[in-house]
Length: 231
Image (cartoon, rainbow, N blue to C red; front, side, top):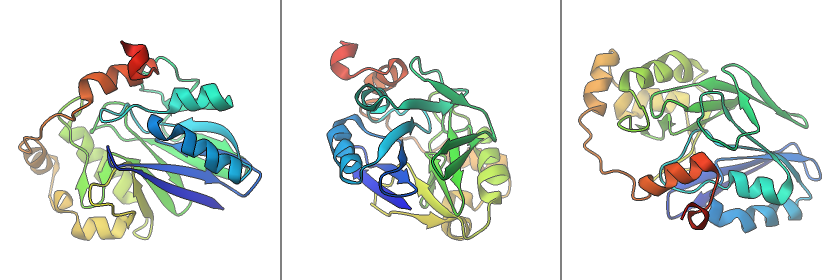
């Protein structure tokens, strides 16, 4: 299997390129538009055919490369069915699968960080978007976020996976590459709560500044355009 984890320094975003092997179909999860040329170079080097590109949710801290990659490769743009994006080709439902050649991902609806957040499970690993981070969780104070929804998404869905499941988040601000469900249960300070109200108390008192690009990234990502096109 080909598995490339790429990092964007500006937004601390992880992007994932996945394929069952050289010369086969590929998909990309959470691409950043500034790195579109680099993604294409990797695909060309490995003789991969990009057929699907996925965003785990509407991002507020960077412009997605979803539409750009689709224009350049003809790949299908995929998000969860609750996404408000205007340019998605396929919207997957909770428990529905996303398939490419010899690769299958199962989508699970995990609202809380945003109301359109989905995680994607692939055999021994889960791509958690901003729902579950390494030693953290996604903030819940914008884009119709909800700490109570996030609690249930985490404890009823994500953390019910086997402890050895590898966690690959959409962001990490300390450049940690992965974790496991078991490690997050033990070590993640935001998960050491007894109920949804305790979790909400933590999340409602984070007092975080808005992402620097939020006011332009969200509308750009909803319309599938670049900053220049948004102007």
